[in-house]
Image 1: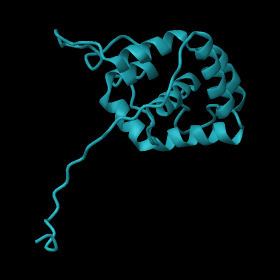
Image 2: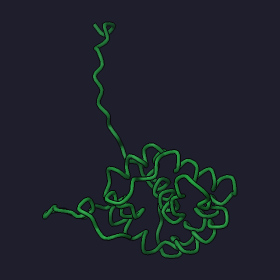
Image 3: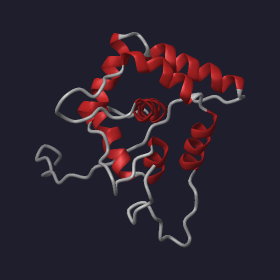
Image 4: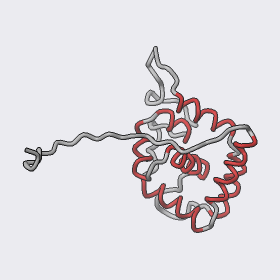
Length: 157
């Protein structure tokens, strides 16, 4: 990772670590990431010619795991990464140096895993590895309440 920028520095004196942050920090340290990346590398896109370089395999793998663990769609995980410092740290994104992968990139990577039938194997390996460590990961949901103005119904009199 690059030198830390002001975007990554916290100025919150009374900040308390959250459960999500603790969970993601633990997953960073216990996950068999190198072995999983090695399983994806043969089918991952390579940088060829002009255009955007591919996002790193480990980053996209972490992003896919995060998406599964928190039960988020492609657009929702993109937005959550912009919103949550803990999630950005897990995926190793520093907004001072780079943007979050967009929903199309996230979707394309997931389809790559599905096309080569790698995704289910990886998640099974992650589950088995975590179970061997005495851990159990289940899906969670982040609720996003959006408020909209709507006229009241005239039928409710």
